[in-house]
Image 1: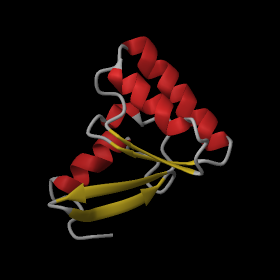
Image 2: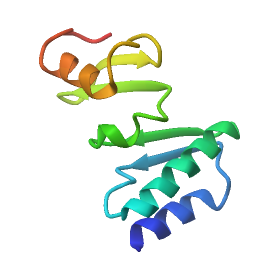
Image 3: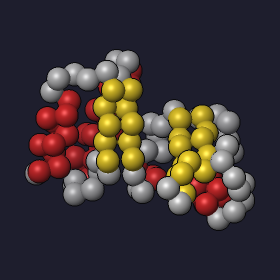
Amino acid sequence: MQQKLSICCALLPRPKVAVFDEPMVGLDPHAIRELKEVFRELKEGGTTVLISTHMIDSVEETWDVCHIMMNGAFAATRKRGESAEQSLEELFFAITEGGEGGAV
């Protein structure tokens, strides 16, 4: 309940940029589906949505730009379509397990 309330409070002022840290944690499956829809609506309305998460599958459908961090620094940045054959999870493991190395 506290997670839902925090998300609602963050969206009340209709921000141009919304930052979420692990927004799916503690939510039930229905709330997660609803939150994904809220993210899509925000995006379509021109709001920049920044989501920090370890639950990669939770953003697979909605991401436009992905920044992958490793050891406290950006290890890679990708835009949707640049790695069309890879899922976000595959991209993450390729980068963090040494497949690409270095910052991009």
